[in-house]
Length: 107
Image (cartoon, rainbow, N blue to C red):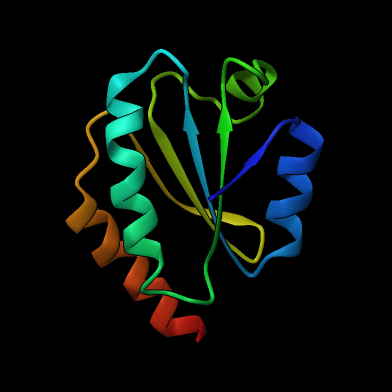
């Protein structure tokens, strides 16, 4: 996943992509670092989904803009609308089931 560095770039990414996933983490979060490779491997199965990551340490305003209270956080958008939000304790299997439903409806 490519890393974004600003709120404007994040909003632009969400608006331009039909299926967009955002992974929000922190540099000091061990769970964030452990979960990221699993999420990256999962979305490789869905070529129409584009994923980006952003660090809350670099871009603190995303916490307020997107109401992020805990990390890691995964936001999934379909045509610019948030349809899935998972945070803190994330089951990759459950997340994939939810994403595959939306993916199959739009692809």
